[in-house]
Length: 400
Image 1 (cartoon, rainbow, N blue to C red):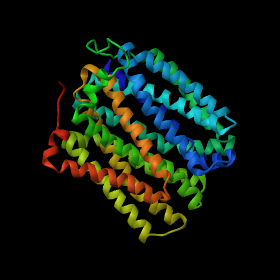
Image 2: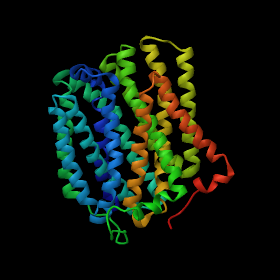
Image 3: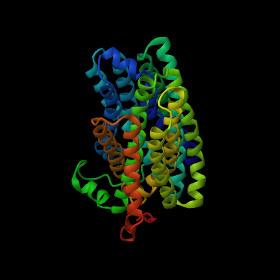
């Protein structure tokens, strides 16, 4: 079963990044059609991720109670319906509602994917599998914006959401036939679904909280990048949708390579050291972004390349961070993996979306907003790891 599980999980994990990346080149056109501001159209990304994070608290216990398979199938069906709602939206608030529902749907499949890895593999094996899944996630930004740009040019931006529905229909059939039930027999599934006692052992674990916040830091940096990049490159610097897709895709290809190299680095350095290396990469990316904005070109393709260069380093750091940080956060919760995964997703995604949403309310331009988020969070986490009294927060742990 383990040997055949990875392709199934990889096909499902695509649903979330596809819903983020495929319509990025269309964001300026969508803002114009709905007569809304750039920050309002950026809110469709923030709402998606916030719903995906908040939904973890409600759907995670369901995955522990009823199993991974029914939650996956229900999530895919909701994904199909919400994508079609977005494609048919004629008023902006319907698009926002569709994105919230789509976030809940992606949340369901995400919980199943990451819980299944924790169900079937040890923490050290899990870190490598999470990195493979993250590599699959990172392939989508390399392909989806270009595909979305071409679809939008030929058929309009609504076709990107139609494409999501069609892909999800194929995945529904594949998962329906091939996904086994992975929930362990010792999973805690009795008692009320939603009660404080279910979450208290998880959030009371300092080790879990530290690495959950590390995941949130990486997600916030990536969310700020993908939400600000279309506005900065297309509207501010005047790049075409296809030029934007090419720049975004080039960055993503490097990210894909980093994701598939990450398991080798994790095996050689260990989880904790890899997290430190990832945070240092994010901090360096922030410093570089500020420097190129002060000293680099201010217009044209050269300015676009200057903006994207530090983002490459950010994406490498994110590729190195997510696998080991996720594995270490979940290491102590084999008997309640669904609930722990849900809390991790809530902190990671809802926390990231709130942080980015707050920064979007400031007057900071895209490069400085991104630098503030990724550099500030990385610096705080590295400072904590440098202080011996907090060693119990971040040192390697094993399953209880």
